[in-house]
Image: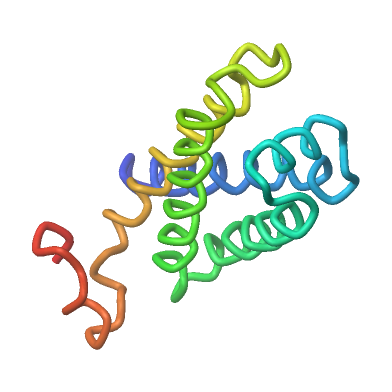
Length: 135
């Protein structure tokens, strides 16, 4: 296996692992998750919706024809999470030392790399909507 293939797989595993790891807390209404989604005005529906979307993104990252879609979904979700941290929550939430923010940043970087790497697998009918640097 080439180093680029190893990095591609590693990025997929890391992104999926970090998104899946947080699902337990979202779906069991952990106090930290409830606090976060209450603060951003999305409790409880947003907690469930984001959890389901993260689960879908994680699954799509391992379906060869849909890896690009999982990466795109993860990029959107993590951009939203980072935006909420910067504007409403703060980098550190309830004394977590910025752990959730750093997880979101890591997933965003991994998902961007995944999307860039598999951009040629995006159906031609959708590629015309991408910015030129993604073609």
